[in-house]
Image 1 (cartoon, protein in one colour):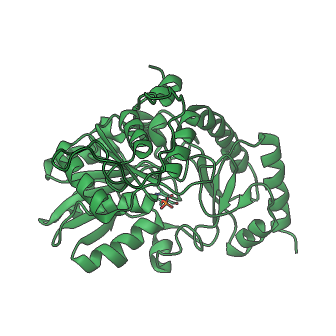
Image 2: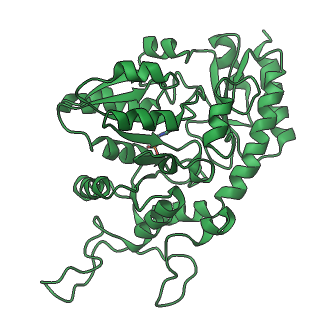
Amino acid sequence: MDWETRLIHSGFDIEEHTGAVSIPIYQASTYRQTSVDEAARYEYGRSGNPTRNALEGTMAVLEGGSHGFAFSSGMAAISSALSLLKTGEHILVCRDVYGGTYRALTALFSRFGISNTFVDTTDILAIRAAIRPDTKALFLETPSNPLLRITDLRACVNLAREHGLFTIADNTFMTPYLQRPLELGVDVVVHSATKFLGGHSDVIAGVAVTANEQLAGTLRMIQTTFGAVLGPLDSWLVSRGIKTLKVRMDAQQETAGKLAEWLAANPLVKQVHYPGLAKHPGRDTHSSQSGGFGCVLSFTLADGVQARKFLKCVRIPILAVSLGGVESILTYPVTMSHASMPRECREELNVRDSLVRLSVGLEALADLKEGLDRALRESVTD
Ligand SMILES: Cc1ncc(COP(=O)(O)O)c(C=O)c1O
């Protein structure tokens, strides 16, 4: 099936009682059982819900896995995947990882004896050098957030396999429509479904997918035990969002590419980070593992003063935390997405006060240009 069709028809069956084409929202916490001895298909909402299971089935198919798990947020999905590690084990993590993942590892998992090293995963030799005898996993995000740096997934998988590590990839920016890490050998894919999968800035959700039976069994145990499951209404919202994923991403990506070129040519902008730009150092690697350049870019202005002024003036795109919605969103990483990362770490990564991230939505290109142009001009007036 082509992607348009796959997004609409994958991973769940039409509801058998009524034939409802849209999966019903099964707003039930528990289910009648006919026997105390035989396990029923559905028993209790934390361990299973038909609306949530439909989303999990869809995501398993779309990512090319066998098991999907839907969680109450992207962070719940990521924390559940990180819980595959045990006390005394060590994980390597791409150094410009999402700030919440950084906090989960440094402030939470470290308390349970799971150690971490942040490494430049665009440099395979740096990863190899950071592997320790207790290293068990490698966590990747490509393109990274917010600098859109590219990690070679195939090379990382080969290295990880050589050393017996399992790999986790955060595929939030690309979605399975543009990038399918499991097909390249990654073991677990995680998502903030709050972003492009949901697509309408109206739900907080997360997903993990794997094709590995053993990891799936442990993830199921973690999901049921920890209990951070996605509710039925929120599951339905994400499933609905997924049906239009291709048309949204195609349109948003086209506008993102044009805006990246336009910003790169603007004398008030110092540098634009977008893998689709000819000068982007990771462009070829990205093209070899993804079907498009995505809808998120970031750019640097002269300094933090100009960036703050620009964000104060701008009306469209709106200033907000998050990305991946139909509305274009500007984010200030140092006080928003990466606030939980210490300043020294941010500076080392080049996530500076002058950096602004833009998630491109479905508005008309001309309106976005006009809004950005006006705010850029105001940002340099006294
Ligand atoms: C790349 C990435 N991963 C994970 C998350 C966390 O997702 P959530 O906010 O749904 O918990 C985010 C949120 O911004 C993100 O951008």
